[in-house]
Length: 255
Image (cartoon, rainbow, N blue to C red; front, side, top):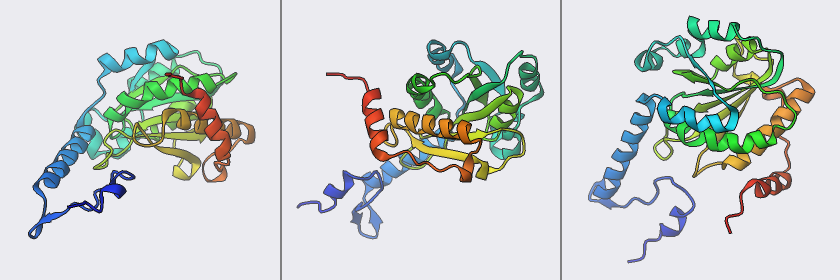
């Protein structure tokens, strides 16, 4: 018997046309759902595997600065979102002691709600993005454990950055436990709210590609620095044709 849903399934990871056995769905689909749910739970509870992750960054931008939020551990981080939005005292002092001139962009990597997303996507994304950074002055890359997006505002201010870019593991879904988000904020300082940020979401193998995300971010940074704005005031007006051409040029030829 022909499965009439088969053609549509090629275009979406959503659970459609699952079939049923009596009043319930098929056993195979039930097991797939439970697996996806377990993967999402694991992604939320796991921290960064620093032993393998930090060396992946070194060839791209040297030794990163390792920081921690005010949340003492993963459990407290999940229960107290406010603590993930600020640095602990040791991390704050570490940045204050740096002799850092004013820079254009501070790059901050945060484990967020999916360290898996950062482990899979941060280094490959930065490989493309750093090739587009041109003459921008970049601060040393900061890696924050148990952090949330807003922790980048404090870091950006301490590093005297004109804008801050935060790579963060997004809240896992049942089809994408490894999706990374990218947030851009001009003139970062503690206390800013989300309307001051631009977001590029769904960056992973089955979502927005690393080259496409890198090009989009480079365009937004350029406009943000030029116009001195970000968030709802800054629109993504990059022509699709321009983005497609740029991405094609960034993807290595494997032929």
